Length: 396
Image (cartoon, rainbow, N blue to C red; front, side, top):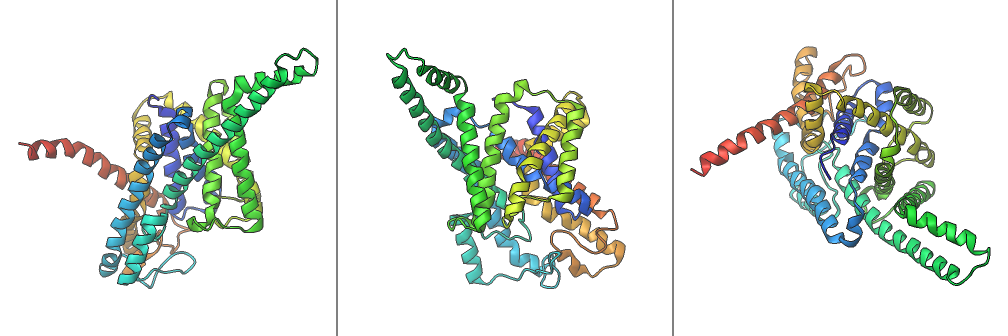
């Protein structure tokens, strides 16, 4: 598929909203963006799914593991190795932690081995004080492969239904065959959409069952709620691509979608928290999908206006991985400024994810957001510019 700059801009807006949300932004803004910013990533990933993978599962799984499992393991192990060193430099400490008062501790040799084992075998065990967003790698890996498996099974069921109806109508000229012929016509013309809708329904029902009864998928870290909802949103992204040609983006619809998200954020808050209640499960799909459509509309408008902002957002959307990996450690730069500004204890640099002192009254969250996006992107840009030069120098 050719480079889709609209979806790249959607991904850029999603990653920027994630960084803002992690920066201890004002409560109203945080509640608004948490309604949809993580589902955005699953939807945009599903947008690029192709039915050719039904008969080429190995290629799809290999791509998923290369793009999600390997980066997860690489950077989780990287921060695992650095964990105790961070304590030596005071970047992590046992005095200051997250906003609920939780703190981290130096790892013993046994704890390091256990975390390494969990990283490799269950995509868990990562350092939450340095890698807080890493659950997404596991969530998208499981959701996308789960979608492929369910799509393949559902597609066969629908194909079997079509064959049965064909046998029913063959050689039968009675009026009773009219409904069979109509159903077969719908299946033939819309099999991809019907199959995807069925998979989305299955994922939604399983997620609802899990949330209602408090069940856990014991083989998945955090129980599987995020993975099931991720599979639903992944399917929604694929569905949207089937209907994209008929979709009309207007500023009125953008405003309407924004109002819906705002209403939910004030009266029925929800997000992709793995501890979500049944009420939060029911509250999530509508604002998440409206938030995506709102973001998509804005992205389409931005895509029609080339310039520096457009180039930055496309570049940002095409390089979300370094922001995922390094935005929390990049916050530490602004934490140093905040410590100096308020004359705080240096140990507060260990706060997760940002320094919470006076966070709801000042505007340091804006600086945190700029650093969380800008530093990883700046490093990535420099790396890509310098790599050919260094390679040429080495190969002389």
